[in-house]
Amino acid sequence: MSLGMVYRKELQKRRNRRLWGLMKIIFVCGIGGGVGYYAYEIGISVAQEEVLLWKSRHEAQVAENDQLKIELGKDKATVDQLSQLLPNEEIRSLIGVVTEKANSGVDIARMQTIIGGITKDAQCSGETDTKRFIVLTPVSTEQSSTASYYRGLITLAGIGSSAVNENGSPEAWFDTTKEITVSFMLPGGDQQDISGTLPLYHSVITGGSEYRFSITAGRTSFVDASVMQCDL
Image (cartoon, one colour):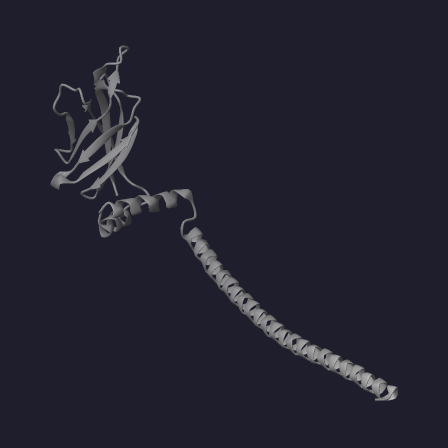
């Protein structure tokens, strides 16, 4: 074989290797490009889904905020209406008393009748009836002590805490500086209780009249209870 022939074969091999290398490069680049394109498409799709998700969340949040604004507007309107119905602390306090009585079982129709019968200019007798009774304590020697008014229409009784002497021992009489409880007993078993420190004030409405009581400390062990009768 001549030297020229050998040289041409060697040159052909080199060309083939270069061509094969170039084809591999093109193949790898093609695969890489395909993968990159596929990844790009996936990225675009994911990004679009994220945009739609956040857009949906934003729209839901906007709708929720709008609903809250509507509800707040309704609440404000309700508050304004209540403010018009309850213009001052006295009326709000009255509503509180009525609610408390209703929750304790007092008939609402009865309260409505009583309140509806009250007039602006109540006429009172001008005469007061004052009696006294013992405020019982845990160590009182008396079993009971009451004061009755208007032929037994209203009867009062009271309980309190014992006064303490200098040795720390309880006395038989009540401590006038501490809270006592006074019961107003009516015919039929009805009873109204009030508690607090003296003096105490309470009104009893029965039989178409209002009876206004004031209770003050009397001599040892006693309280003085005065009442005035007024028309409703």
